Image 1 (spheres, helix red, strand yellow):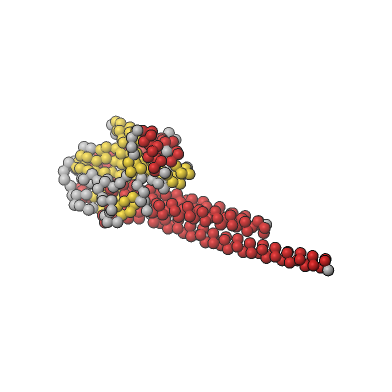
Image 2 (cartoon, helix red, strand yellow):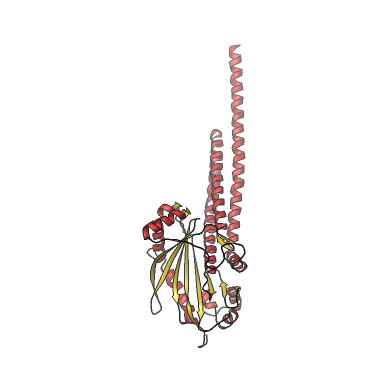
Length: 374
């Protein structure tokens, strides 16, 4: 960049990390636990500027403020604020917010890449994310419904700028600033096709705001300091995490289901009917459970009247491939439903055959008794 590049006057960097920690979370119990522990109230999250009738949470998550953390960046330590959001479908989202101000654009971009590397270095057993996750599991243990330990997690990084040292329109910003190093994390020049892919998902509502989305990063220029776009991106990542979790859960369940069916088929005829019936009930319960949870995930955020936010949300879901994971979950649920129906029919047929055998035996006994008597 030229020496006269614009400077970031007000802004920050937000690093998200998401984990699946339970089948569901009792949010009312979580609020009570947090109030009892910290003597501070929690917050039911809502979008800051968008009217409630335009965009609403299906069940508003509980947001709590955790202790700040210190990160070594550049020339010294930076204090970052930390918040956590608990979603009713079992996801916790951590947001680490680093302040950034009075930095040349290239320095701001470098700070974001350095923060990303530093936070990824914290992934060890005693790292930042592990400590935060352990704190949440311990604090809200009694509010977690069927806790789970999953290796699946999601992360997302957002660069947020509220003001430059000069007024910039979205068009001027894209012309004067190179967003590619910030969005890609790469300092080497990228090919034109790669640059085009990174900058394709760009959105503006006013002439002086801009949102650019990629798979794992985003840039938000918002002079009015609205956080709605960041909140929408967080929800989209939470939906991605849950769909990935249930996709892998069903991937593991299908081979197990086939093994159980094969075992039931090898059982003695007198036991086959009961085993088929038990297996059918188990699969029916699994389908009902996964269907309920995926519907809650799908309805986590309702976007109705805010056309701009709806476009950003829909683009994020498509970019994160949430519909593709949802379709994969639906296909696997359909396989299990078909298997349940087949097992139910086989169980009924086995019971019918057993009844026929019993009737034949009873008739034979009657004949023997009659002949013996005669």
